[in-house]
Image (cartoon, rainbow, N blue to C red; front, side, top):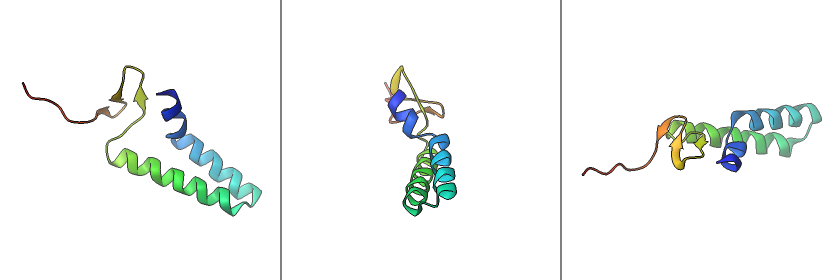
Length: 69
């Protein structure tokens, strides 16, 4: 959960984007843009930041199929 959350947060993408823009590095700007878009699509699909209890427990709610008994 910690590693997933570290790479799937808006903060990392925005920091990389700022560094790429300030440093004039096109490749860093592109990588940051891809990361920001990826995180956005994850959120849109309902995949949020993970809780340590289970990979399916996220800040947006539980993901995956639910079983009916």
